[in-house]
Amino acid sequence: MAAFDVRISPRAQAQIDRLRAFDHVRIIEAIGENLVREPLVRSRNRKPFEPTPTVLADLARRVFGDVTAVWELRVVPWRVAYAVDGRTVYVLGVFRKDCGTTDDALA
Image 1 (cartoon, rainbow, N blue to C red):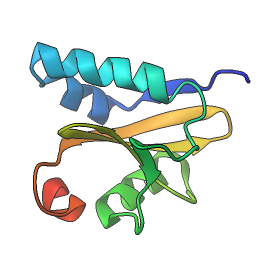
Image 2: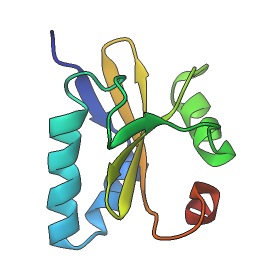
Image 3: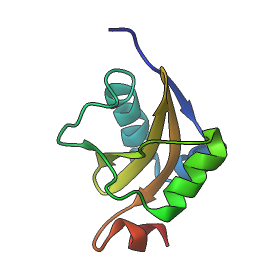
Image 4: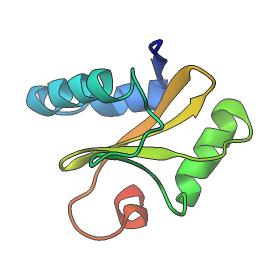
């Protein structure tokens, strides 16, 4: 299976750059290991948002119009929000999720 092209949005890159070096490395490695191949296959650490939080749905629409689903990659305690268009994975954002809902973490 051919690899997907992963593109990190400027917003997501800024969020990653603000992290501690340890978390920065973990997230970049997780993106490389999990999103280059089969980003649309459910796994223990990868699933679609159900329902998609409004903030992420609006961001995905601005990036590339109509999106069927926004997915999350779990890198405890971080979440990487991404969407796939053809053979390209767009990383939309990175946020910390400790307790509560995703909407709470994005607020």
